[in-house]
Length: 517
Ligand code: NDP
Image 1: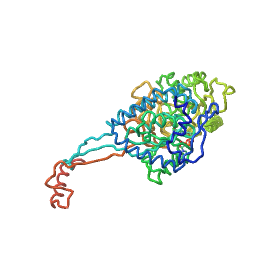
Image 2: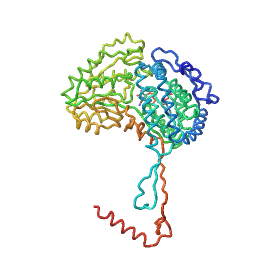
Image 3: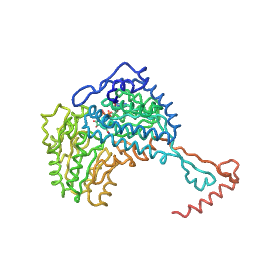
Image 4: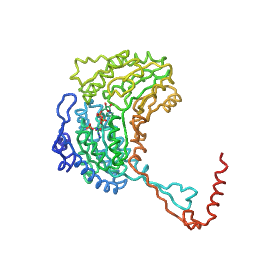
């Protein structure tokens, strides 16, 4: 029987025995394309969340004791399970989030790849190693290792309900932590499915990965439940609330917040490829992508050709819920109003509006937004400054790539970005100077598919890193150990040291470092 067929069971089982303590309150998740109910889930209250974290703490000790090999075997079983049920999970993502089945497959594929990398690289990145003890402690051996934090709380969004939380879940688990995951109220079924998949794949340690469901209050309860770290992905305003709540218990946080990512199209760019990437980067997933391209700065040498190419490509795009649709509905209905407001503000400020051929009167309901490009929007307009999170793109003509970079960097956000230039040196130089955590040269979003690369932002886009070695270390604490190998006749760190020792030390320091000016 598929996990989807067992959805009711999953619903009850998603939090294990938590339901004994949960309030009787429940909530529904619905299909944004049809309004059909996808599942009914408990609203876990503070007691239920505390109980879940307490169970996670017991599991965390057992999970840590398994060591890298034992955890690696089980993480492989989990990813094998996901790979075998890929279509089943993709169907659920399609129904609950609205994205086309093929896009759901792509999202899950990326998550599985990260799971494999995290499991395969944990020991090398985090395991005990000897480091140079240095001159002052030459008679000691020095060791470094990265130890798990215990239970990691993960609060996830709805736009990539598998890939995004898995960026924290996979790396936290691989680093030896247990995880309690609170999915968005818009995608609880996907979260519950993942936890049920874990229990099926890793039956000897079901509590190493658990899910609690509910609204913001459940998330806030997770912040207060004594987790070792709280990994949050979502909007900056909610991120601030999560940080404030975590501050009550000095719980450290990882913040993956929104973006307003820019693409720079330089004089020598392959304009057709840049247009293709910009349209995909902006419109795929209905633009509900934190690292989606929202602004393009094209130099005057390529602007006209670039706009013509984008306009041409826009024609073919059609939102819908069928397999051939380019993208689905807005997952969160209220986001449609944000997108409309940004479009209206930009048009009111004199922007030219370019739409594809998709006929909005044929859209199944008002949750579908047509692909829209805004030309030459004033830089102080809300459509340029705030995250739109819809299938929209601004294109602005600039003198040259330097002006493009200046405008790209003039943003409170700094998550990802893209540069198109045929010159390797120019492309790399612009990428380095872009104020963002990640930049792809001659493509979009590619950095997210490279498990070895860290993912995270600067400024209002947050701090901390998931993915890669940094992502593994993010869910650990560094542990330093020294072990004396031989006792020296003179011990500087003893009240018994001779009075002359300090002078001798000062002379040695003078010889070693004094010549540097
Ligand atoms: P939020 O930032 O409000 O929610 C993200 C997660 O935080 C959800 O699981 C949410 O739960 C939870 N949450 C909400 N309030 C609290 C709280 N007080 N304490 C702890 N957890 C809480 O995002 P929305 O879903 O409302 O989307 C709003 C905007 O955020 C979008 O328009 C978009 O701009 C941006 N966004 C950015 C994402 C990214 O990838 N960077 C992803 C999603 C959204 P619940 O859903 O139950 O409220």
